[in-house]
Every structure is written in structure tokens, then in C-alpha cells.
Image (tube, rainbow, N blue to C red; front, side, top):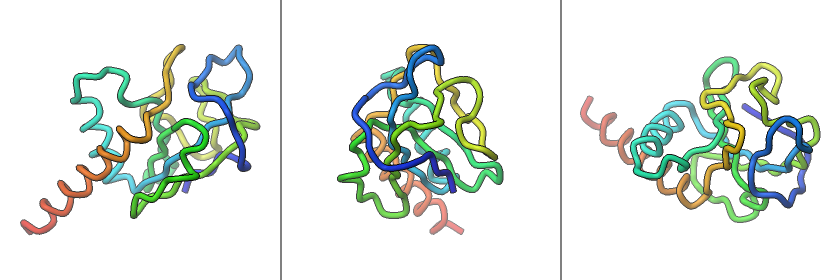
Length: 136
């Protein structure tokens, strides 16, 4: 599972490496559901629907960077949202978590993923997976 740090935070967008480490929250989901959600988000008309996404070394989980404070109200079954203070987290081409990598690396001005949009995509992904599994 991906873990980024301690609990606090107050900024809402990812920053370039030259800027200070941003405090961000991280929504972690099983890889299958996360990959479906990424596809759903990228197929949508809004090109900024999905921000940077991490994968763990074993590719068991994906982590979506979301605005700070998301963890306070996150209640999506099968997922977890971790609060961070951004210490040691650099939004750059280098993964901020040892043993992980970027599935979708950050762009220079990449926003984080909107929690409401992510919630809807994860719900849709769960329904698609359930439907596919019931056809077996």
C-alpha cells in the first residue's frame, strides 16, 4: 500500500519541483478498480479530470493525489484516503514513495484529481468490475 506521510495540509494543487512540497491527500484503491477509474476519467471530455497517479511496486494498488482535507469525508468502500503534510513529497518525475512509480506522472501545472469526480469514477469502475465478474 502507498503511504505518503503525516496528517495535515492546506493546498489544493500539485506544484512544480521548484516550489515547496505541497500537502496532499492520497486515495489508495486496488489496482484493478483504479485502472478502470483512470480509463473512465481519461475517456471523459475534461482533460484535467485525473491528476497524478502512483502505483506501488507490486502493482497491487494505485494512489490518486487529491486535495488536502479529502480524507476528512472520504467514505468510498474498498479504498482509503491518507492525509499528508507533504514532507518529503515532491511532485516531480521521480516517484515520492519508495518502491512505487508514476502511472500518470505530474505535468508542470497538473492539478490533483477532484475527489467528487474520483468518487464517481470509482463507483462506476466497481459496477463495471462487478458486472464483468458476474458474467464468468
